[in-house]
Length: 250
Length: 292
Image 1 (spheres, rainbow over the protein chains, first blue to last red):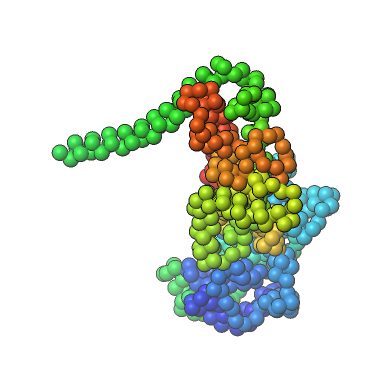
Image 2 (tube, each protein chain N blue to C red; image 1 turned 90 degrees about the horizontal axis):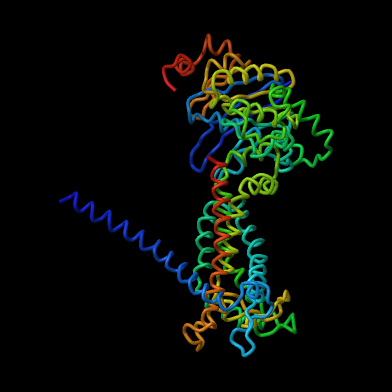
């Protein structure tokens, strides 16, 4: 039973054709890595799953993306509700300039949840899932900006987990972090797989092999190869994939 | 040769910088020295607490409260007009408007601030007051209300432009985080962008208040010149600035006590705007620290 289904997806920024006829199925409770050189369209594709490209002037798409069988670009789909089901973690940690607590409960508060007991429970649960609870449990009212970069990124993951999204998109979540923080984030991703479907864009191929079940290689807007991670990295079918993963370009 | 040229240019630049500072110091010195001689005739307590301002009448009284009251009444009306409208415009431009539209509208709005204040003054007197009189029958031909409203219109761009700058400086990543959590544009604007830009918005409002307090032409033309303590916007009032104009243009003898009153009220005005400017300077510094 596939959770995400992309059918003949094309995307454009103005006249620029950035995604060319992409087809892809993603299974639930899996980690999928998108790799490829800069400008290959992997981030654009990732951001289509929660319609984050909607506000970009000149963006246009063709084809269908189905999540749990529902076409997410259909006019009856509320984009706010979609984003509650498909959470996102960004390249640089972007906590709000508010307290740790306020950051985590933000998603629930915009949904109108006011019950303090529920909110506190969610804060503890999400921060625990994001492996941050022990570090911040005594400073929930401190500004999120006072945390370290790695802690901020785990806070952003906790913030995304708080609304129990089902799917989590990660756009190079460790790109701005040191190796120790990166290791923590990777460990976290593996742990979250039990309850969530995760799609991660990464420039780091070791990272893709460490965390993902399947890997998709994009090149100039095309999906070149989509395979089990172990297989894609050991026996790539396409010559472009082989050149890229062996470091000959990109 | 080249070295000498450098030296000359350097000293020219230094002199022009120095001239500005000296002029400011000169103005403050004149204000102080003339006020000191004023306060040697009028006790400071009378100046601060007397409720009558009648230096040009036979029965002379020197209580500044009526002028301060008029100044604040009009400034409050102005800010009540400018703040909601200015903030709405700022939020619209930075959070909703397409880039192209924003680039056209922002400079157009700033034109509002470039209209000569004397034009605003006559607009208040000859257009707005008669219009308002249709709804408020006992509104005088000179009144605080229409002067305040028109002054508010004049300072809208100050609020909207500076607030918009503050909102626009909020990193895009914060808005994306909010959208990514399923927040609407409205929630993103008011739960994330506005709080994050709050110190910049406060600065814009304070600068607008300072501008309103110091504004002269509109109030001289449209507010009347009646120094009374009132909070009724239908009344004619006199502001500090309007009083200074009245005395400067009148036939008051140079060096007399009546003449010196304008320095005493001038220094009062100076203290108000000085305090406001410092608050905004402090808030701005705080705001810059937050985003470094």
